[in-house]
Structures are given as C-alpha cells and as structure tokens.
Length: 200
Image (cartoon, rainbow, N blue to C red):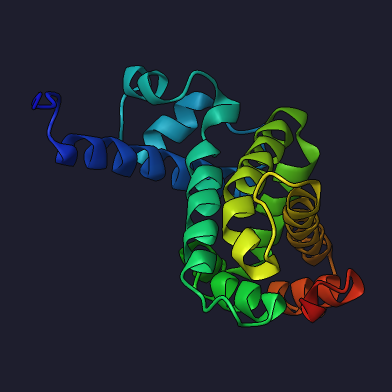
C-alpha cells in the first residue's frame, strides 16, 4: 500500500487560518471604509502580514473574502446533512443557519449590513459570492436527495438546491437594506414559505 506523502495536516490548517485572518481583516475594512477606499496594503497591515504574504494567498483584492464564502458553503451543507432526514426542510435549514459560525459573527448588525452591500454591489466580489452559491448547490444536491427520495443529479433535486440558495441569498440581501426590521433567519423563513419549501 502506497504511503501518502506531503505536508502535515497542521500546515494546511495554518494556511486556512491565515486565509481567514486575511478575510476577516478585509471584511472589517470593506464594511467600515468601503471596497474602493480599501487597498491591499490596508488589508495586509490589518491582518498583520506582509504584502508578499497577502499575494501568496490572494491573487487580488477581490479574492480576500473568498475563504468566508467557501467556509459558509461547506459549513451549511455539512450542518444540513447532520439534521434528521425526516425533519421538515425549512426547520432543518433554519437550524443549520442558526448554528453557522459566520452568522454569530454578525453581532454588529450595521457593519454586517455594510459588508453584505459590498458583496452585492461590487461586481468582482459578487462574482465570487455567486460562484460560492453555485458550489453550494452542487454540495446540497446529495444532502437534499434523501429528503425528497430523489436522485442527486435529477433536475428536481438540483432545482430545489438552487431555490434554497436563492432564498437564502435574497433574504441576506434584503436584510442588508437600511430599515429592514426582521433578522436574517426570519427573512429566510419567509422566503422558504413563499417558495413553499417549508412543506417538504
């Protein structure tokens, strides 16, 4: 049996940790200053790394938030997979979202809303957000299939995954608007009810 060689797993953990430090520094700066007013040098300084290290992890400024997107993608799919199969889908999604570490980091609602507006309005950043959503669709299909007695590759299962992601995305975008009194979870629940996903 061949022995897999490579760097120890803690090295990858350290790389992931560095990516998240960069992402969180960028998120704070983007929300506080705006995307255009934030430079790569600003992000590197806030993250406590050199400019060279920044570019080792991020090809460009718009890539700085990518770890946040990818962590959300994998986390939501994993938490939803851990929910009971016979649990109503809307309840399972609500519980999976409520347990999301990224959601708990939205304690500063004003800052979180500003960041979400950046994510939705800056084309380069929005492209990466939408790409993460598409990746989540692919990861959700096998998770949703047992709940619908369907095939993960069927049009119906993939359509359900797409509708679910769109519901969450639109709810977050609506929450980011000024004056929206409801929270993200409440808006997501409304979106799922509107799409009748809550009946599954």
